Amino acid sequence: MSRLGIEIVPVTPFAQNCTLLWDTDTKEAVVVDPGGDVAKIQADIARLGIEVGAIWLTHGHIDHAGGAMDLQEALAGHPPIVGPAEPDRMLLDHIVQQGAMFGIRGVRNVTPARFLSEGEQVSVGRHVFDVLVCPGHTPGHVVFVDRAARFAQVGDVLFRGSVGRTDFPYGDHAALIAAIRTKLMPLGDDLAFVCGHGPGSTIGQERRSNPFLQ
Image (cartoon, rainbow, N blue to C red):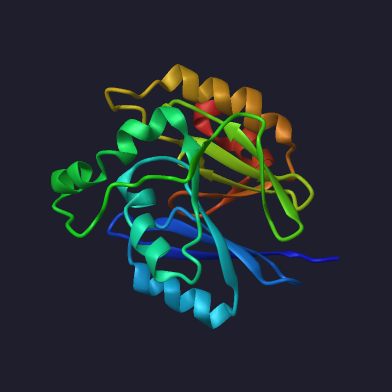
């Protein structure tokens, strides 16, 4: 039975966890949230000998999506950019403007091949991921969950000991906490996750110790 390969590539000045996911048998792969440092991502792809079939975005912030268009053009076959959910279109359309706010140049606005919706599934090799729309940090943030592998990429929704920022004009703390409680917590205490920044965790660890969930 094939396993799910996982490698984190820290990118951008924000130390964002760009994540490579691949089927260990077929070497089919996806890149989740290539926020920048495209050459670094390409080097890891080449070292692992994997073939990228898609680029998945959890949400539209520059540190997660800023390198998506350049990576797409650099990779063989120009794999499609998929996600996030449609309400984040307004962020993807203004990546360059986000960059100007932080003094970051060389980024591009992003046009995905398609947006994602609650209940859809995406796959890499034999591994199937459920798409959960978890608004609050951004209005169209999505989470990717491989229930069989007991793994999720949660972007900036949930962190070890914390939750995503909501101090943006479009942020909604109540919606974020509701999404975590109703969509992530029921996934089971043994489910491990990679988040957008910092170390990963498990649902159980956050249920027991995350101060935002007590």
